[in-house]
Figure 1 (cartoon, one colour):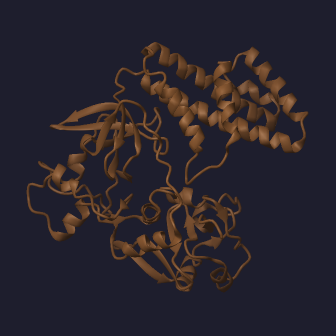
Figure 2 (cartoon, one colour; figure 1 turned 30 degrees about the vertical axis):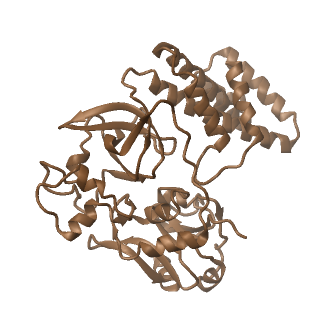
Figure 3 (cartoon, rainbow, N blue to C red; figure 1 turned 90 degrees about the vertical axis):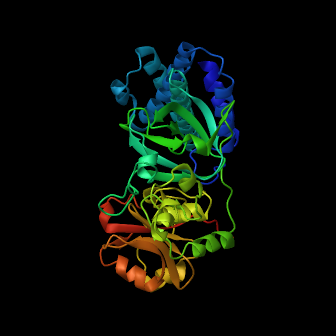
Length: 410
């Protein structure tokens, strides 16, 4: 186990994080190397590796907790007395170092905890006999959520034997999670056969419901290519501001659909799931994914550089300080691509006059629209108050919003 800890520590020479990703490229490469070098291990040996990494993760977790709350907190852990004593010694050593070094060490411990937890998850999956190996997406790939062992992408997307796209009572496709970009590395948790279709239960490092979840993520087998090894993680590069703004503009007028994140058509949807009756023009647009939701609009415009859900967007990158400003002062302060966000919605500053968003209205209809920025802010502030930090405890989530600047300033 000491060898594993040392391998993880090596990674902290490089700490630059790209895009919305909890790991650096160096950390991804390390984890992929560890996984690919272990393919020949038996199921029991992989199970042992999962347990070792779980222990490493727990040791680092409780070290952080003990540093903040001292060693009484260790009584709540499942670690044995020897490990608890080692943590106490470690915490004492950290506390004797200069304050600046303490912050750096605790940050490194947090990174080690996350890496070990991710590796434990990977080897736990590989130790299961249903594990179906690794793959990469060949094209933009819709990912759906279903209750375990109940995957039916064909039924949701109006394929043969089904009557229509599975919209719920509010005209949303609740099973859709995201459209994964081409070249996304996948772990195939297991293979599922249903009505002549082959699906895979999958996870990625960004999208994972975890083992305890009652539901799981699935893709159709025809969108992916099986690979001999775990593929390199796709880490999006920062697009140019002009490129993002063009993508946003190109989406104007397209429908709002829950979790839609790709408006550029996926023609394979009708090819892979042919309808038994001829769809209308609107139905075909829906089936071929000609729509986006609020955070999906930004996600597709940045090629996956920004977070996929609105709550994460509300905490992404840096805050634009607006707490004590008037609406006119806020308008003067914001820049194109700043985001106005709260837990359930994302609005993008398009320029100094307009916002752009994929907006859902009460009549169960929605689309990508431009709105005068002052008009939109005045509308928002009828029910919400602006704060600098979305975790501000002075207001509940439903009563606040923030403005975040994710695109680096010049």
